[in-house]
Length: 457
Ligand SMILES: [Zn+2]
Image 1 (cartoon, rainbow, N blue to C red):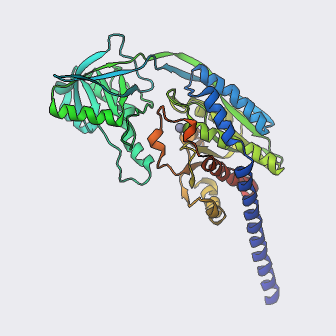
Image 2 (cartoon, rainbow, N blue to C red):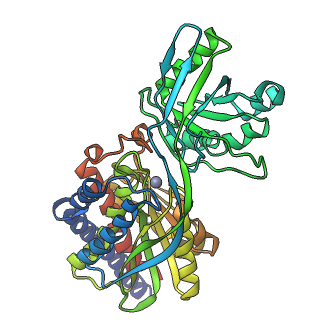
Image 3 (cartoon, helix red, strand yellow):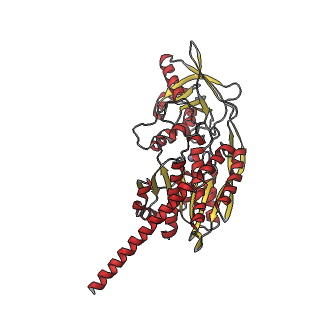
């Protein structure tokens, strides 16, 4: 009896080891495919060079939808679904102006309007500037010191944070809500230090919103480059009465019908069980949206091509999702979750790749339904391929609505040390993409989805 048990135990251990060995051989094959055959890089080049920046509601975003539909079919999707969503249509207008006016001279400062901001009107706005470093400071100054002035939020990234996303997360509230808080005290406009840790002259745009619970007034909002913010702060110290002139031509037009583009490989065993991975197709208008988030779009799109290349019919339905409107509204993420509910689709998990096309670092997964535990058990399979940690709590902005309906989500996270240098700037262009890093990131997503299809439910 004891002998029989020992024999069975050895057989079990051998079969587990054999399975892992098989998986590790398959991962090698998957990474080989991405590093030698995949189309991520050429697809991204095409998206960036033929369409470029593609803010929701723009003609370029419309072109990107057509482009993605074609690229999904080219990757081998058996079905491509266009999911409609109404998106905001904000336009920047002409080139923004910000001039610093002191007793002796007028100096131009590099700036850009924040997304969703109202414009200044043709005459522009001139007013004295009040610098603050926090909302608490603003509150202390109160209406008597703020009324009729322009508030300058001079908030730096906390350089001690190892993951720059955490510094961004702390500082971004001044970009997002700064205008409403300043309007509460009757300010006429705001300028914010760009969300960046690099001391250059590139202004970073990004979305803001007017919060009617804070103030019903809508005042113009601009970002200054890191260097411009330094100059302004210095000028305020030496000339306390210093003013600035700002002029923007932004307009908020009626919402526009747009689409998520969903490429699908229908599952052979469980066609109504979905494993989906996506990035966002829209981008800011000032650059080419290469890292943010053309990279995530082409990386996840390549999933379809991978299964085709390996000759594997997935058990579950595999989806690559190019979400619309991540940058200024999240209408696409909501439309995706609504579509899933309406069609009674069972989403086992969804991944988002939206932190740049850099070298792989982490897979972050929600714990619900054993997802994190299962992925964490593959740690050794991934370690030769630069995934150094599998961490709890995944997701991404486009997946917020799916998470709300109980779908455990995954966030693919590359090395983000250089991401916020170019994030939301004119410098987010294809030449900043490293082919191997992009492919390694895509391969991480591909390998993960191969394993999920095999072992997850
Ligand atoms: Zn993004």
